[in-house]
Image (cartoon, rainbow, N blue to C red):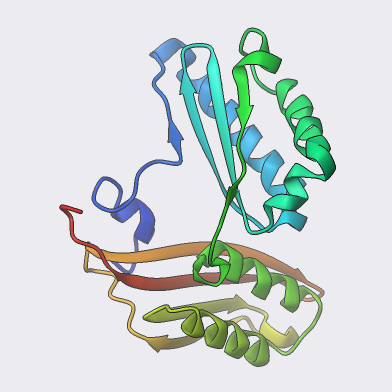
Length: 216
């Protein structure tokens, strides 16, 4: 099972919690879920230059707290907080709560070590592949940075028309150990598509950050 299931969802409740924390009845669940998807997609595109790796959304009665996880929070905040105010103004138009200017909170959270984030590593690999850089060089450098940052293991899988080949193939690169079956193993996972001239190349990244006790 560890090879076929998203490692993060496989560990929900044991190591990880949900990125969206709220409750809704049957009547409002669909609307709230679609709103979360829209907010998350918008922020992932809008804050790309800030190195965004994820978005947490917390909802209470008539209030929403949005936490973009970024590697460069200064880019989000802007000079004198102008960037954050503009972002909040745009998000207010997307949420369906009363008095959004008052009840919507945007709190950027800095990612201390981005090289241990699978989303960040996959994004960098995808960007470099789109610039037609040699895939083996790109992957090798990504593995070196991640291991140097303190990861105990990393696995990268490329699939598609790699290097413009006529026939699609899969190439796997790894260093260290990535115990996907061990539930106490803290494994980050991301899947990012890279659109090259020859077509899409799928980039999957698994990063093993070490074990964590279930009671911790």
